[in-house]
Image (cartoon, rainbow, N blue to C red; front, side):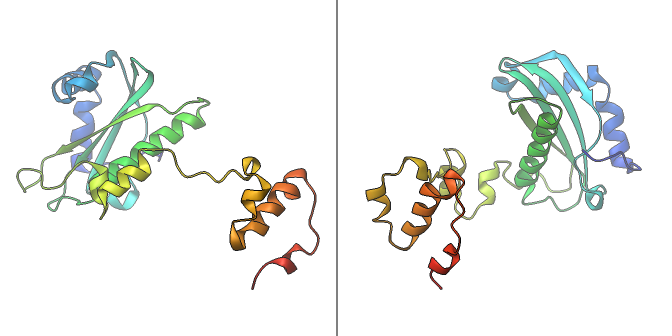
Length: 199
């Protein structure tokens, strides 16, 4: 998480209000979706330090991070305020990136599992209502395919369980898989194997 920088007027007002836990608790009780509010213990809400906003974007965004307990364990609520005249079409992707940064910081603190991070966008721009989707999959040209990729298990090629006779049917990649399975996996250096590779 980045160090604190000189705040913009928007940043200062935003944080002055929402840095008060009672105010933040009221804000979340009112604006969190009911299904999320039901799993959050707002009595455990605690303000966290720092910011994930890039330095060159601090004139357009402010952020504030809270930790709390949820019905499923540790969690965070990450609030971003967008204060620019032209809303960011990719804001959902930005929220996802910042949320992942919060998850990474949680791991770096010694935790073994990812926390739930609930991103919340606070908007007060000129265009009404907010014009863009806040579903990050809508940032893709093919959201249905993106959902299939990112909501399921990622493809895995585990050569340790592929039978030799199956590997032999794998055309040009068969040699690579066989070398990995029978030589490199056992710590044997295949001297000169680069000469076996196709040009």
